[in-house]
Length: 298
Ligand SMILES: Nc1nc2c(ncn2[C@@H]2O[C@H](COP(=O)(O)OP(=O)(O)OP(=O)(O)O)[C@@H](O)[C@H]2O)c(=O)[nH]1
Ligand SMILES: [Mg+2]
Image: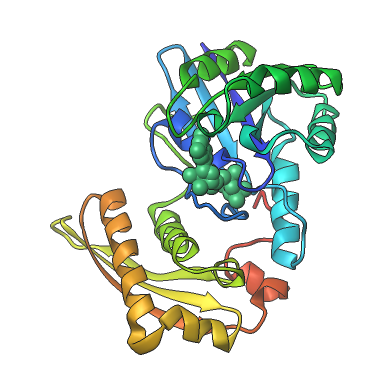
């Protein structure tokens, strides 16, 4: 039996969470076209007959502007320590820049085996792949590079095999039915945030935190009642989130409710309030209150 922890690291928007979801075979992390979608370290566990891989999805590496993104960066950096393998996810269709090779070298310097998942091959010319693999090698990145498309499921089996080969012999780290370390309540808040990321632009989704006040499954199990707060950081953001006659919020909530229903497998009654907490992303007490602890391992 092989088992171990694999930190999934890379620039923001590279496709890390999409890849973790495909590898695990379930949605354990939300995904959006905007950078800085993932804020927390999220465990996604893949079980096979002869192996268990505990993937640690992390916030993408991104230029830091707020105390929240500082915390996210620290979370990613800390997650890459004490693992058996670093899976560095590179967005192949963006080409290779010096900042990419610098980051790869930074993680190679951790002294932990590193493998590159070169993803999004479905939206780039095939000939570019060997050219980039060569460019990486010439830049001093000496490690296995596996081209994949998480969206099309291409080469995912090969990537799993390559990862398992690098893991140590050992028993399962988690019971075989555990998929994630996050609760249903956490995922409810994340699904709400995902729909906000998809619906609104610029700083608005990045300045939103979601707090679930009530999450209750009725005794027959067929219905969940969910009540949550959408906290934004400016009064004008609140107006945009709600929209004219509440239309924007109503649409976003309907979209979120559908996502929650398919995740929970039951009907959902969702109520939500939009609140303003001025510049909460730079306030240590509010960061803590919203679950972005100063110590990412807590
Ligand atoms: N075409 C294509 N798009 C992909 C692929 N993988 C991810 N994407 C898209 O890339 C965008 C970012 O994906 P995420 O999985 O959220 O990326 P991430 O690295 O987790 O981003 P952060 O959490 O912000 O760091 C989304 O729009 C995905 O649908 C892929 O294999 N092919
Ligand atoms: Mg992510």
